[in-house]
Length: 348
Image 1 (cartoon, rainbow, N blue to C red):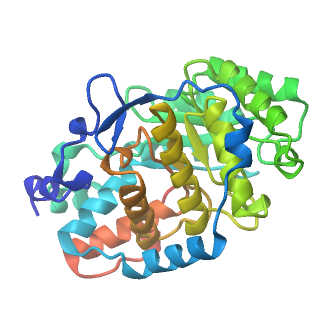
Image 2: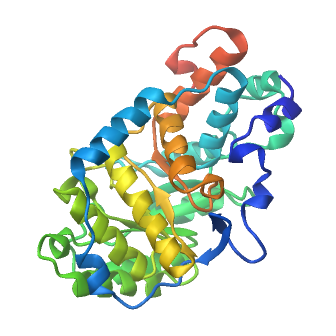
C-alpha cells in the first residue's frame, strides 16, 4: 500500500490536517474558528444547571460501540492516527531510567521498520504525541527525546490521589516545568466535587494553571471516583473555566477508568463550552484502552461529537501503555494477513 493511498484514507474527513483550523485558531466547530482556552470566571449557575440523562447516555454509548467499524485501508489509516495521538505511558512503582529510555525509543519509532516499509508510509514519519512519566524521570525523557518533536508529559500534584498539601502540589508542577516537561497532567481533589465546593475546585485548578506556565495542562477528573455522570459534567465545566488545556478521564489507577458514557459526557461539555466561549479544550481518555478496536471507537466519538479538527494530537490524546502493541499487531495483519505474537512488538 502506498503512502498516497494512506493519505487518501486519513481521518479528518479527507481534509488535510492544516485545514482543521482557520487563521490563529486551533479548531473549528460548526464552521466557527476557536482559540485555545484562556479560562473564564467561575459561573456557578452554569455548573449547577448541568444535567445528564444517564440512561440515554448509556444507550448512546452502546449503539456507538455496536455500529462503528472500519476496514482495510481505512482501518490502517485510523490506527496510524491513533498512534499519532498517543501519550505512551509508564507509571509503575518499579520504573527505572532504562525503562523510560526504552519507552522513548519506542515513541520515536513506534512501528518496526519493515512494517513501515510494507505499509509504504516512510515519509509520514509516524511518532506518538508524548511520553508520560513521573516527575523523577522527566529529565531522562527530555534527553532521550531531544530533537524528536515528541513531547514529555509529567503526572503531577500528588498523582494519583492528589491529596498532598496544595503548596507541595504546586511546587511539583513548577519542578517538572523547570525540568523540561511540555505537558503537565494534574489531579483534582475529588472531595471538592463530592461536597459541591466548586469555588475551591476552580481556585485549585487555576493555581495549577498558573504554575504550569506555557506547558499544556491536562486536568485529570478521576471519573471512576466521581460516582455520577452529572458530577463528571460539573467537574468538566469547572476545570475548563479555570483554564484547562485538556480534560482527562482518569489516572489509570482507579477501579473504573475511561468509559464511553463518560467520554460522551465530557466531549459534550467541551462542545457546550466551545459554543459559549469560542475556546477549544482537548480531551484525553486514559486507563483501560488496550485494543485497536477501542482506539477506533474513541476516534469515532471525537469525530461525531466535536468534528475532524479535534482528531489531532493538539486536542486529543490517548493515555496508553499496552495499546500500541495491539495496534502494531493489527497493522501487521493488514499487510501480511497473519497476526504476529505479542513478543514481536515490545513497548519497553
